[in-house]
Image (cartoon, rainbow, N blue to C red):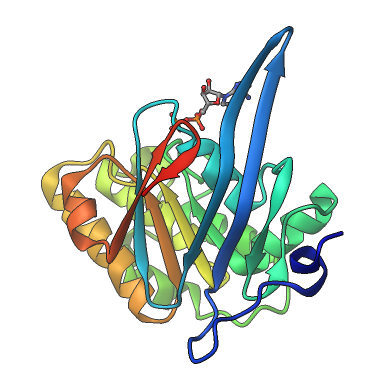
Length: 235
Ligand code: ADP
C-alpha cells in the first residue's frame, strides 16, 4: 500500500482539502484480446462550494469516471476520497453504504423507481442512510419546486419535474458530493436553467458538485471545466 492510500489525501497547507478527491484513477476494460483503457491516470479535486463541469467526446471516459467517483465502479488503480474517507477499494456493500451517506448521484436514466411516488422515492433513499441528519421531505420538495407533486408517480411528471424529483432523491441524505450525468440532456431551455440554478445553489450550501455535460449553459454556470480525452485530463 502506498503512502497516499494508507494515510488518505494530504491537504495543501493553507487550503481546505477538496471534499471530492480522486487520485491517479485507472480503469481498463478487456474483451478477448482487446483492451480499452477508459481512464489513464485521472487526478481531480472538487472543493466545497465548487461546481465543476466535465466535458469530452463520446468514449473519452466521462461515464467511467463518474461511476468510479460514485463508488458504483472500482478503479484498477488510484483512489477516491470523499471528505477524507476512501470510498474506492472496498467491498461493494461498504461502497454502497458510504455512497448513500455522502454522495448524491443524478443519472441521465433517472434515479426514481417507477412504482413509487416522489415522496416514497425520497423515503427509500433515506432508508439507505439511517441516522443521517436530513430536512423534512416537504422542505426538500419545496426547495426543488415540487411541493405540489409529492404524491405524483414518475410517469405523471413532466421532463423538468422528473429531473427535479431526481435531484430531490440525490439530495435526500444531504450529501457532501453531488454527481450529475448529463442532468439537462433531455430538457427544454427553461427547465434546464432551473436545474442548473438548483445545482449551483446546492454547491453554495457547501457541497461539491460535478456535472458531466455537453451543455453550453452548464459550462457557463461551472466554476471550472475539466476536459477528458482518451481517458486523460487534457491540460
Ligand atoms: P464517455 O462517457 O465519455 O462516452 P465511457 O466512459 O462510456 O466514455 O467509455 C470510455 C471507453 O471505455 C470507451 O471506449 C468505451 O467503449 C469503453 N467502455 C466503457 N464501459 C465499458 C464496458 N463495460 N466494457 C467495455 N468497454 C467499456
